[in-house]
Image (cartoon, rainbow, N blue to C red; front, side):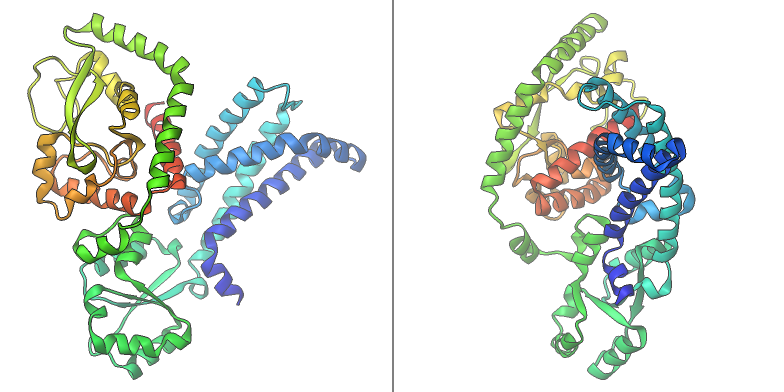
Length: 442
């Protein structure tokens, strides 16, 4: 019972464990610093509210930093690196907030906060290392029976082999499957989940066998769903029209209209910041190279309708070259390279958001010519059933495309977003985009 609980709730345990570690670190710091029980009780009461604010901020940063994913537990060096980086960012944000809102979050002396960072960092790295040891233990692994002949099984198996912290053990069954052999395999390997591909699922003999083991409370998962849960993208080779009919038909009009309203409000609120920055960028472009400040280009939008996108000009006028930009691209102006690297060239796209051409989050709008080339990718037209975005799930998870093959892989992440789009996912993407820009450029 205990092992099953750990198997199913590993990442939840990691999250709750961080809260416990934070509380222990706080108690340790205050006890060491103030000693006797009376003074400790006074200081604990004094520090409780500001430290609760610190805890919430740190948990948010840890979540954005992917510390509640299995990748964060790959090895001790990765654990230490990711925890340390997240703590540096957390500490910087905390100090800034405490300084700006000092009337509300008084914390004296600040040395207690520094001591908390050190204590929490050491204890949390130790806690996560212990967790990893538990994750890779055989008794805490989920044993999966793979009933699939798809090439995806090899990719899945290789990924699980190099990431033991995922807590999976893959088993394969004979091709000539029948009820008795399957039951023996299930019993022998303590199978808790069966993963089956579409081809095998269409085999009546196989479905009858699976029906026969339902009473054993074994989870049966379609291969595409299991792949999606591992890689956070949709495998094109395993889906057909029926997948889109089943997965992409949900009506999300309330979500879409509310999302647009929120975006307009955010743009209005951000104007005191974006307008001065835009003016400075415009002056810099106008004085550093000949040509217009704003660059206009036709892109493909929702329902395959073209629209004009606005960006600050980053390249020399009449610059010719390949569709895709490359490192050290000579077409960039000096200021343009900086704007493209920091994505400040995309500020004028706020006008596109107001006009309803794009959203903050969605598949990145492609140039009309490129979209025409990409039509050879299976089901690529589905990318245009929702508004494109300034940033998106594919941008966070895959590099900029420089070939049709890469565009196809990136499209699989776009499909994941189209299927799972929600306010929660949008907020996560925006926060991750902010973190990516911060880490990349600073």
